[in-house]
Image (cartoon, rainbow, N blue to C red):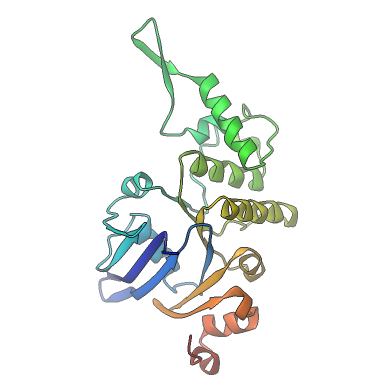
Length: 253
């Protein structure tokens, strides 16, 4: 199976600093790839190139087998790449369905020429996607500010899936969540994988990454130092690769 997304030799420099140095990786449909590395390893810079925040200084990006130029977040969205950062980009003063349609609100005409929000349509469509993802919230009319951290994460994921995301990039999806809510988010990631969504997960929580990922890509100081199938490695080896333990890092992939 060919990759849903593949990056080849992506490079990004900030002045004299090479933040990402000739990194290549790919993600297939229905596959979860964990992107790991210590602070400053280049993980955030890499996903920001994929999501259109940064323009690469070198390398190529292929989506569904075709080379693409992702020069803005809007371009990434247009080809079905959605990125969920830690802040989730939710409007706390708006309700659940308004957040799912945030920036893409459905309008209807009154008196044939006045545009108003079609709240019933957005409510019903949001209810459908929440049901598809087996997500429960007290009410779709509740403000985001009243929801728990896990529920907010679920709403952000629902928004991406409603707008037909094919690749979902998740930055620390279980950060600051309790154990119960972590399990719910991890279960949601598995469900998305079963529905054919390609997923990149960035996390410092190795247990979480191992529990949902198929493959792991490890970065250190801007370079890709290893790629492992989850079933063929263990947390100790991955930690050694992250910190640069020489004997493990020299192992051939």
